[in-house]
Image (tube, helix red, strand yellow):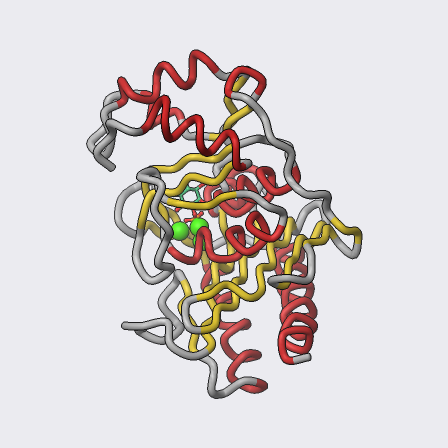
Length: 265
Ligand code: IPD
Ligand code: CA
Ligand code: CA
Ligand code: CA
């Protein structure tokens, strides 16, 4: 009952937040940069995070909150119940395209993912999962992930990782990109994880993400039988930044064994 109640509240808040974001399309955004010229944040990212925090604190004052924009708690552990919030995942798309972004909310208990909600605001598609209770798009159950081989798979990854870069030997990624059926890059980790969950892509790889990027997606992908690890094949800890590799089980295994095993990630 506890998780159903939390999920019901979260759903209602996510829908309300989505409506606020849709209304913002007709306003002028206040756009600022964070760590570099392409790392953008808007007044809406901040407002939406604050909106969630206010709601959560009203109903669940004992819960802790980790939010990308820094209005939550400074956490050193994931003890107790923790909300991991990305108010807008895909801010660059939100600003440039007014689509291809999502709200991402994960609820964890002692480091274990219990609820994941990802809301594709523009399509009004809310993906959610409660651990052990299935995963849904709006209220329709999502089928378990299907297994695929490398040569019949579409994988999502950013072109940056196939060019020379400081995080990974790009020579490792080139054979993978050559061998798969196709690659895609959507610019929103949360939706790219949802795409793994729904089989629209078969894997998603990223060199560096934060817990709020993958907390909700992990619950949804795992609930459908998918595998989520870092690029070394290790479990994520949801407190630190890490690389990310989500895929159906057989593809996860073959990519790790045949392409990534010599990587230093
Ligand atoms: C970003 C998006 C993007 C990923 C970046 C993330 P944000 O999240 O998920 O796809 O490549 O690493 O930081 O900043 O738009 O919430
Ligand atoms: Ca950001
Ligand atoms: Ca994000
Ligand atoms: Ca964000």
